[in-house]
Image (cartoon, rainbow, N blue to C red; front, top):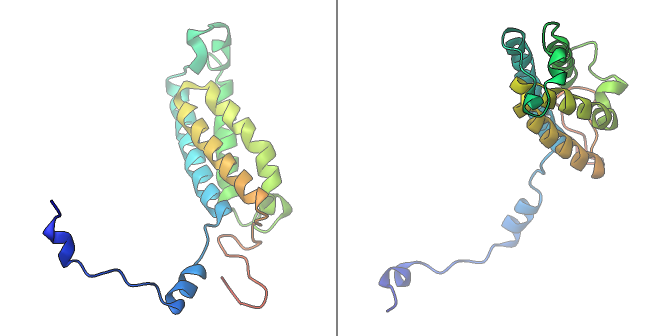
Length: 168
């Protein structure tokens, strides 16, 4: 009835105080870096989808109405908006040297205001509907970071310094 395999296993040892202290001192998830990576992926995908939309224009919601097909053809308005928004987002999130450390680069609140526009423009075009989902996930991660008081460091891809402990 009882499996003899389990009788051969050594009993688990309690954690020592040293190992408990080291696990409590481990790093935490930096949500704004995680959100930045998600948004970078979405922006790259958005740029690719916008370029593809120039060759195969399709409005995502055309099964509901054909009236909005005019924003994708004959003049590619939505594709241009997606391309510009994707390139600006890539430049903002990486960031380019002129943007690094500026107030716009360090502001999570500004991202929370502008990225929903990216979600809307992505959701309207057929090729870029999937990046809209990633933008939304990135916005949720940025909101999480903002609500916990995280900051974006002036120097890109660095960690904030803790007072009295040096670098994290």
